[in-house]
Length: 278
Image (cartoon, one colour):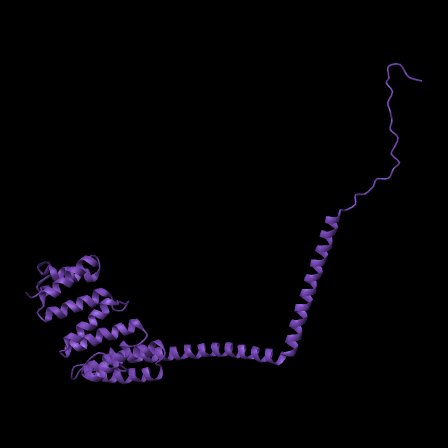
């Protein structure tokens, strides 16, 4: 019986048929098989590689141990070598400092008292000879250290100060041909001065040109050029000297070399001692 005003509602009976699950297609089945195959191959490769590595290590155990000991020995040797080098460098530096104290000792006048413990010499040649012996000993014993290299250079200087020109030339040439470019430049600079003092100006000019072509921290371009201009000036070559001074004035206007060059070109402002002979 229907109630007035109400519409009938249709109620669906539940579907008694079971839901069928979706079966994978052939492509999906093939992808699953391929993935499993790749995983199996990777696992087999890892196992094979690990097995071979272990077998090789086992078969070559003695070689592996030997190589390990060689590496360890090299590391220990490097550390020990560094420690020994540092100790020798410290000893060389101390010895070099003592030699420099002798080289810089004051010169005394006859009858002048010397303070207790102080070293003093009557002449610069006597002082240079005393310092020279110390520098030579340092260069011989610690030649591969920085202080040993400096000792080679100062041995040449002290030979020169002692009036032993040939020994000084030989010593400075050895340093000038060394691997340390800054020390080599100092040696060439001192060698050029030795040539000037012994009347060998062409050789001095050649060295000043070398130093100008390859300036270093110890002998900058301006210093080498000033020395060359001074040499030309002493030979009466005023034009060559002026050309160098003019060039330095432009290139190093605010630097020390440029300032000196400007004074040389304007001697009235700098004083008569800066005047270039005509």
